[in-house]
Image 1 (cartoon, protein in one colour):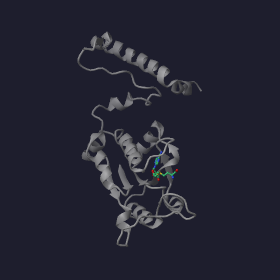
Image 2 (tube, protein in one colour; image 1 turned 90 degrees about the vertical axis):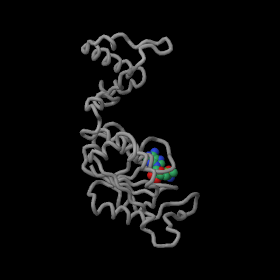
Image 3 (cartoon, helix red, strand yellow; image 1 turned 45 degrees about the vertical axis):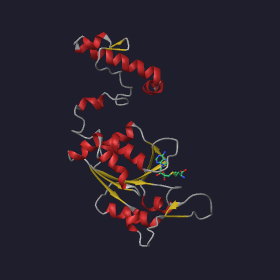
Image 4 (cartoon, protein in one colour; image 1 turned 180 degrees about the vertical axis):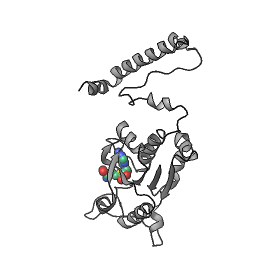
Length: 227
Ligand SMILES: C[S@@+](CC[C@H](N)C(=O)[O-])C[C@H]1O[C@@H](n2cnc3c(N)ncnc32)[C@H](O)[C@@H]1O
């Protein structure tokens, strides 16, 4: 999978290229990640990428030209959708992550300040994706969340392919509780069934616990199945 990112802060992406499953995806060649900085597309001595909004008001807006040039540069070797990370976009969820993980490529566009010039959205953006109904300072962390979620679903990235299948949301339910050593921690024992070695019983217990957790924490997921 080829992911290209248009961002004023390429160095932030070290967080996912140097760590975690996204690093594994890069190391195994399952994913490539390249950043394009709109500042590199400026000609003035201040390398200016933002300006005051027409009509007045607070804050600055990312200028169209450096952004458009960066997107076009990325598009010259990436024919995937251009996705703008935006609080106004479709909410990122498991279904959307699955559909993105099935793509060959896409380009992520990260905004800053008050956002980006609308004409870039009108002329270059295919889709907007949001990480939730709140506003963060820039599109970089939302883009990294998306890449992190997608990269762990790529074939051969997770050590045990079954582990993603058992994660929350993959079966329309939350995950079951997990335990590791020691057997007793602050007087709390690991459930006996997990020490039994009986794999059928363990699988049944995990399914029951997953259903219980879902009923307790996210009953809406079960209701969805009934609809
Ligand atoms: C401070 S925000 C601008 C918010 C914009 N004025 C609005 O209210 O729609 C700056 C940038 O952060 C990113 N951003 C902020 N919240 C986001 C969210 N919930 N999901 C995805 N990206 C977000 C976007 O790229 C946005 O251009």
